[in-house]
Image (cartoon, rainbow, N blue to C red):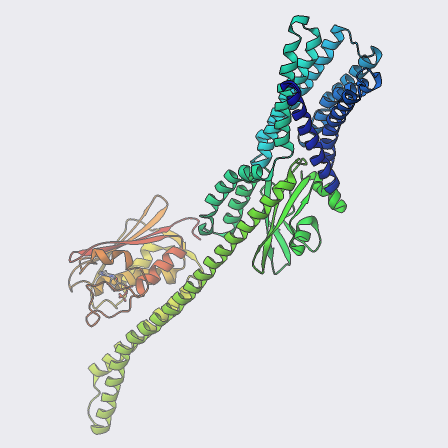
Length: 609
Ligand code: ADP
């Protein structure tokens, strides 16, 4: 056997092997694509077997045998075009031209009984070359659109097509060459044919090991991204990222439906709008997969669920891969990947979809655990805050209450022992003062809980802040201190007057409380750039820099404040901040320890909510 014969035998064996494998594929699952692939390799195989039989039995000269072999070879580019049409639409005009070319070539061969005149032969060869080039380009383009295994396979198919086209071109041109060069094309044809056989083998029936190797980079990329997903801000963002990841890994569009226990449906977040947003009870194929917990490949979704065929068609859902997303016993949802064409290789991708769905389950589970942990933490935090609150409140209420009880007992004893003695006015005043303090503390506590419930700010109405500040300044609760209010013109906005009054009063009270007698406390009210500014300034003890960020927090008192000297429980500023923010404003403080403080309040004048 010569080297050329060996190459030829090898090429033919590979083509036959591909035919057997794709034929077995048709037996397992008949789809238009798998049938088209089988037809293509069937034609090649019949031609091969025929020529082998003819050679062994010495039938070369039998006309009918040669004719059938020739016709099958002529049909090949057309069959290839059908394949192209399976996963990227071939314009009808191209199909018609191909059919006409096929018909004319066949007629030419039959009419001339195999001895085609050179000009016609040249035309037929050119028709072959043009069709093969078209197919190769279409495969390359389809490969570019695809990803993962599908992309590699389409690339191999494109290469096989180019090589086969060249082989046919060289073989077809051979009879047109001078006799001296006759040996050359034969060797080249054989080499090209062998190379195309190998490329087709890799493209149409790649061994498992190759598929795994092809899947790996895409999978790796997906897993790398996946690691950070559970920490994303919320579940919808995770679902979107998973969809994008699965989509680019598969080279298809992907959508994830999460199971909603309340409505007993799968809720989809499909960015492409190809799938319905809610799927329940035997509607759509995703629900079937979710119920049976078996991943499925539907080459033609419309055929698998005829009732919804038009809906699938309208939304560009042709070929569907669906895998359940489940973690242990927990059914979380389903992952769907779909394309508007039947991809040739979806059986392989089913494994990948399963793997991606499992990953999605792990990620969604981790997210659920993180949420659960956060819920537990929030619960613990709430419990701790409640305890803090109760102990702080109890502590702060105890001081005035103790004084109150002691003073009242003292007066009671005095009344018993000296019934005729004049009323102890200073003692009674102390009782009233402590009772007022107690009542103020209780009101603060009630306000804090109202703030938590978002019920602190009530009806709003037009309010002149200058007038309001003057009112507050006139109150006689500042240990006889005079409060100056500076303003040029009325500043009118829509606020809850009681609560804004409370803010100003609180800031003035603090300014008075934390500054020495006789020092100045000033309130400035001004309107600037559509906003109202209220500044309360004192020349008091100031706030240490380390405490500044926390003074607006609940129960926080600065480190330079002595509980015995300055009463209070650290709720006033917390309430001020809540009230101001609920009016759409902001509050902050500038302060230097030992020098004084200015509290700034800014409120919107218009459109405040
Ligand atoms: P309270 O005055 O009841 O402690 P606030 O919430 O009104 O609670 O104030 C929180 C803390 O901020 C005070 O304990 C004090 O340390 C500091 N603070 C507030 N206003 C002033 C001020 N004008 N000067 C100095 N420190 C202040």
